[in-house]
Length: 168
Image 1 (cartoon, rainbow, N blue to C red):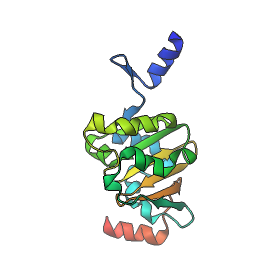
Image 2: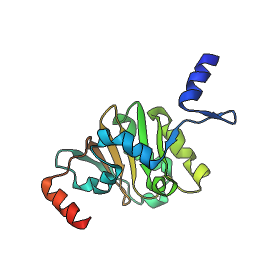
Image 3: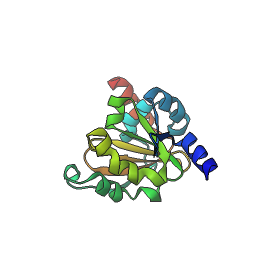
């Protein structure tokens, strides 16, 4: 039993006799870890709407999402169907706090349900990305309630790359 706790605490961390169910990485560290998975730097997530046809699928829209709980929004994503093993999570607050979350997919519901208590802000307060390296998939929740499933790596058409380079 103690060995189990030691292994668990090494991966997830035990803080003040309370198990932490996730790890936090800085944006820079997560960027280096995720580049081979998503096909580029994290800034690529800003252009994910330019993904090649056939590399993403519309999963649905959460109407009036601003007035729904984080757990209801998460349930609408049906995330367990598309993600497995350890995943990275990036939400709007990640950019402000310089934190990318990493956890076993089994703990996502607990993490999201407790997010408001720990951060004084809803988890779904803008865009959110759930990245599954094992499945090579990414679920995107857009700030207007749309949910998309993307295949990784993110591929952008040559025409869209030109549009992006003109904007940048």
